[in-house]
Image (cartoon, rainbow, N blue to C red):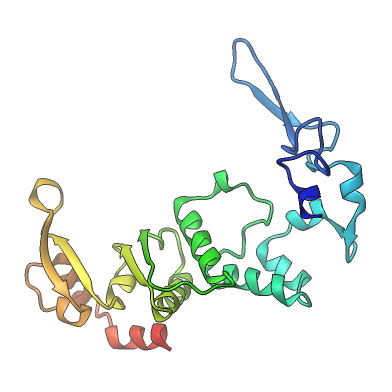
Length: 227
């Protein structure tokens, strides 16, 4: 059963480390040390669970795979492959399947939640998603891929609110609310509210000026995201 492979309950997990893969050594005068569990060698599972294999791989081997590797490995399992493909699409293909959620950055965690929504068997509509700078650290191509995914959420009848400084995101928004004109005590005012193609004509908006100076082709980017 699926519960047999859970780290949270007894069964297939290593009972010595309780499925952690490591043990904590208490140091009285220094910070505690975390060392690999000698019982499972850091694999987190007991021998009975590790005996079970799929296409020559046990549960530890599979959890060590990246999403990109797992898409290939499960290519004939459409249900699994389709879920993983969403993570690829949203630029999370490098994550390991067994990676702890506590090691994810804020942007990765936000995108992973988006994947969960898109991968849901029951389509959700009428929801509002609020994302705080989800493009931080992403390559330009990954930003465009993320924008297409966000557009899909909108097309399914949801509202997506993004707090963002990335001009690529601003330029393809349906509606922009620009706060300013400066930061801190000199900001906090709505200097513009409307579609991005009109933002470039707002003399009080630094964002609009940068969009205009950088020569952002709003129409071209919009065609990519909307198609």
